[in-house]
Image (cartoon, rainbow, N blue to C red; front, side, top):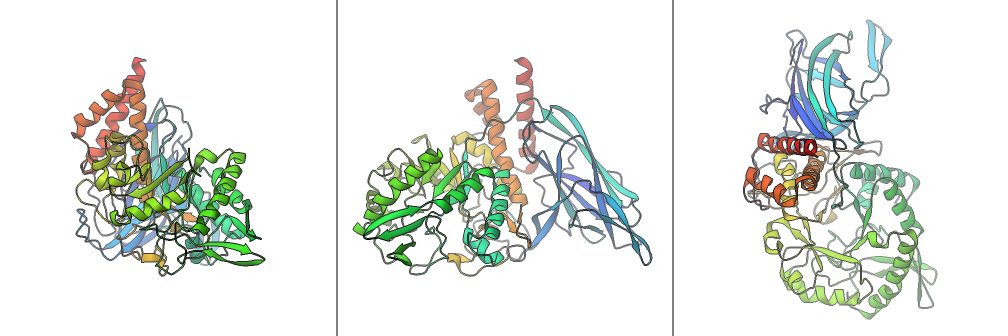
Length: 572
């Protein structure tokens, strides 16, 4: 691209740009997608000057397309090596935080003791080009997924000096919008949402007006990137909690026990659902009914008992005890009645206990029997790694850890996938900061080829350490959760003003989901058999341990999918 004082390189969304390294990825000149598909790319830039070592710059974007602009913020990663990670990066600064900038803000002049100074209206994020370091802009076309008019659109990006408004660098590419849309995302996608992390990070009272404002923005940023399911803390979720200890009480359902009878107040749950629905959520995961990793105990549940607010269940309550069974027999029918009135009873998903191990099989089954037939006709699913839980009917809808999907595939038509930050070897996908973006992106093809119905990840905004001990700002300490590596427990960052900052990893994962939807579009046009053959002709047999290759290969495949869709449309 033309250099008038600043170097620029347009790259794909999969490039990792490091401050001290010249970009090695193939420059991007062309991008294509479907009418309602968000499309992202990056512009790396560096000052090329012999007289200045840094200079304030601003960007103008000339295009007929709706486009969102972000400056990429770097986070420090102090440990990148991992015996269960094949990708190789050095410790240092990794670009991940997306700092929102206003697209084409007005430039204004202000008096300055040494002349005039330029500033941008309503744009708090300033760009400074430097001679020592590469920096990055992230641009997303059609971020909100509107139905655009098909056609070919040039995008021209120019860099201007904040000193005198002179242009001193430009770059661009062409974006092709193909004349059909991605199908509705029926695939259920959840990252567990941790309300207590918002409270601790922002020092805000749970369920206060400020909390709900913060909550709404975090939910909107989740749904904007494909998440349509949310963990719903009707009770405090019994997750990542030391035995005998407690996490902050996060309970939406008000419970009163008076004269031995339970009554329930769903008004706070109502507000949670309404805000989530308004911001794009369709499905709701009820917090687990039993403790994690064994199902021996009950979650922490608070109630007003004869006028006194107190804990009525927790680590000291057996999962299959008569007292808890009596409670469930009152609570679940009341909940379902409420949900039916809202027209959402079939949009709720239920869990027994998270990640049961074989040694806990009998306890899990006993806990499940405590539920009786109270949830007959509703989806009950749990994350697990062991086929025997599904084989004997203990778990009806398994959410399978991806290294173990081979044990389930072909034996059930209704199962989800999940991964943690544990295993990132071979072709196993992940989205940690120290994994390659192609490892993140290739997941969509794997999901399509296995006909997976949903995906669960345990960390949307989990900024605690292991077992919820301590909290740290992931902008400065992304590796606080030592159990999985940097970024394994979150995909968003907290802004100081209470807003949610998206991440590159979040965007790339959504691209993977849209690859899956694009294959569904192709399937509608040429049939499932031919679509699957098209995939295997490119990659061979696909398993979750099949690595799809480098960024160029993955992007070339998606381009060929788009071309096949376009050619099929012409034949109709």
